[in-house]
Length: 207
Ligand SMILES: C[S@@+](CC[C@H](N)C(=O)[O-])C[C@H]1O[C@@H](n2cnc3c(N)ncnc32)[C@H](O)[C@@H]1O
Image (cartoon, rainbow, N blue to C red):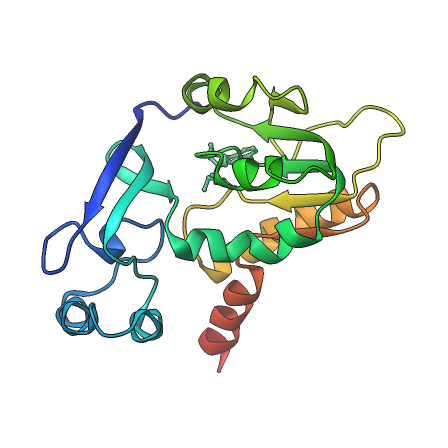
């Protein structure tokens, strides 16, 4: 089913203000007790913030919201999540999940990328975000479900990035495995957003 109510806004992260950390990011919310501790650390060391959860240093960030809930932002944490993939990527790329197009923007800054196909399930997201990127002739955006998408016959991708989830949770692991099986045959290299952290969460849940 198509989700309605997508909006892009700018979130101003300031110390001690309500719009902070967990509120900005797609992720498990930071609990209140921790939030106070993080507020106190805010100006000292970004690394400390990371110990407590996915934070955002002071600044203005773009967010993609669905019915008021953030599903993507361009905070440093989000950029860190895909930086290894982007530095390895070259040639022909497939991205499952357009979102705000943050990884797309990073990939387009590389001259050795020849073409990028983005598979996105929501027409609303494509309408909202697509026009920003479609002026680059290397980009094609396809309205399809990543689990159903059929690439052109004989097509191979040098790298595939899967990012269709809103939270880091071990519940994503079965879907990640399905996508890796489906695309493994036609990809030289593939990664799913925060797969290692999802595995860590499973490990901690299991012991
Ligand atoms: C967190 S966002 C992706 C963020 C993106 N990587 C970026 O850099 O901005 C997840 C996106 O995946 C899309 N999505 C969810 N399920 C999908 C599916 N089965 N197939 C394709 N896209 C899907 C959502 O509509 C949403 O746009």
